[in-house]
Length: 280
Length: 121
Image (cartoon, rainbow over all chains, first blue to last red; front, side, top):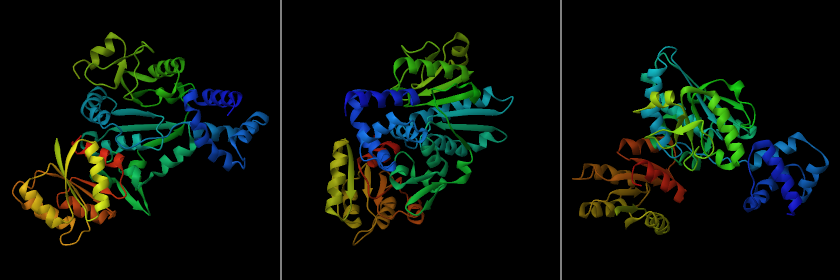
């Protein structure tokens, strides 16, 4: 691929999704975009780029951006964040939100739904403590295609074996042909909505917990900073932000600081917030 | 180093599983059916058993039931690894004392995820 074509594609993807496509990832263009070319009856990547140059079709642009945004996900990804949620975050919120008995969680860039459904299953397991409580899980992703998959809750045998304990598979899934479908009771706990993290977040409301794991790694520094600082405005003063194992706020924004004893969780960087979560 | 007994009547499957588990730093022994596996356990109890279901002489479920009654047999973590992939089989396995369940075909990602889940990694 020539440099002009690469630059056109990487600018398009950056503008629409925030994803920074570096030269060493150029090989991804071929494997991800050839199926898109085929879908649009174009013979090659050259033809695809030509089409993007000559006509601006929203459908084609969306397909290109969705194909390039990574969608790898699995249940209980990394295990630890969910243990922390059960043992630290949830008990804290059960105390702190006693007045209105509502907990609001946002799974930002939820991909095919494993993260919100993992939370759903965990909350079901803890339902004795949640009687009379309302837990709202909002799950968003840029890709409408992946959201449709998330909503259907259908997973391959391979997907249900990556991270999901067998007891939970038996308890919360039904076999559907060669695939596994998560129970409607869990599906109904999650609200799905297409959303671009580069857009204004204020319409989404305020959250007690934001999961934004393994998303920022695809953004450049200014985009990371912008997204994190907007998220800070949507997070309750005593709320929690989860980032992925390879991500941090250090050197990017001073709006958040890492929790003292819980790797991967962040809170507002101010003395009041620090005091609230101290000792957790 | 943790000790894993791989029980499968297919030599190819045992070899594949051995390669994956040796990379994860397990000491490996192999058995070709449930009866041989039980004999091996009575000599030296493994930390974990990777267990096929359908085998000649003694199948995986029969082995598991016998193992759990044997002295020290409650200790090993047992991970089924079988083509049987329906809920009834999975429930029967859990009921007999299996800790985890892998549906074939498997790969190193699945073994890694399942072994991590039961605290072996």
